[in-house]
Length: 61
Image (tube, rainbow, N blue to C red; front, side, top):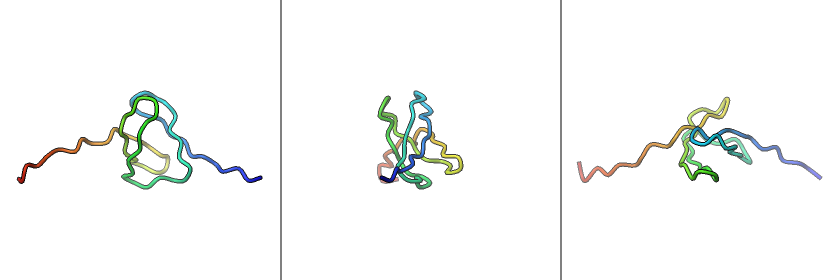
């Protein structure tokens, strides 16, 4: 039986563990299952997460 290694990081908002089944992509958006924060992968070595920027309306500007 083969075990798959999980990659782990920490939510910057609530410090919960965020697990990835494979190495995430730069800019990938993930959600924290504990606090529901929307997080963005900002570095891959080590995996670093930050709160994702809010999407703002441009109202045709």
